[in-house]
Image (cartoon, one colour):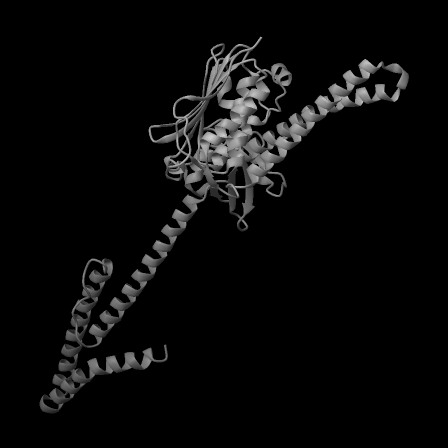
Length: 454
């Protein structure tokens, strides 16, 4: 400001000096009347010139971004130049602010949580894209609307008025009924509030699964523990049992103890598989050797009740042999458990459409279609009574699923009730290993077969 006043005085002095000089000369040469007349004419011309410059300035200021700055000389030229610089500077600042605001809006739209800004009257001032999915709020349509008219939930209005409530308000999505959202209110200032909606569907589903899992484990352990506890009470009375009863009870307790140990082992394995993303070690697995081991174990478990055929005509497989053995062994033991005596079981390893395929076929009881999507859930059983009779823990297919996920494989199940089942595991082509040059291969022939016995 201190620099502007002298500058303005200098400009005025520069404009008035020629007029005063002309008036003085006219007064000296023609008298005082001519001097005043020359001064008046000079001032009139000065006013007209300044008015013209002001008109140009006013027209330019109406739309400075669409026209170049006016061409002027002298003091007005300097004014126009400074105004033009100031306007360009302000335009850049506005452009930067708009860019930052657009980036902020894009970032808020990318946030998975719903965000809604409300004023003191609960009118919608702003919302992001997730709020449209969670709460059905679209800013272009609902700006200024009272949110209670859009979100109809008992207790919602009271919750907005009392944001200090520690527990969030749960809301079922109006668009997708299967989704559940937790609402929280955050005060922004004296009048405005931020409403946040968080999708808690998966968290609640996991919590329900955890509760179910704990209940199932407790139930599975309670049954054998009750049996063992009851038998121990009989053992406490030495004269209450004959030697034959003692041996019978001992065998039952041993079976129940083995069942509990098997359940605990499966739980530990499942916990390890879920906590690790990939196998600790991988190797080139000889599938012919692995299938021969599975066949030998199947014969032992089968006890001559089924006809078992093993076919190996594929290359080796890259991965963790121990985990492959566990997954494949679970599929084979399931086929044996659920196939009546005299049935057939096929164990195959082959290449189909460039992918490695391990499959177990059986002619057993089959599975109804409604059960197929849930077979790999922990403790899910089609028939609980039959599962306990066969000695399963209910965790076998859950273990299979996690092992296959760690090896980028897919489990496909085909089954019809009363017509048997096929459990097919498909491995990506990059896990297949080249054929070994040495060592016999069995090709498409059965490498082991167990006939039905009486």
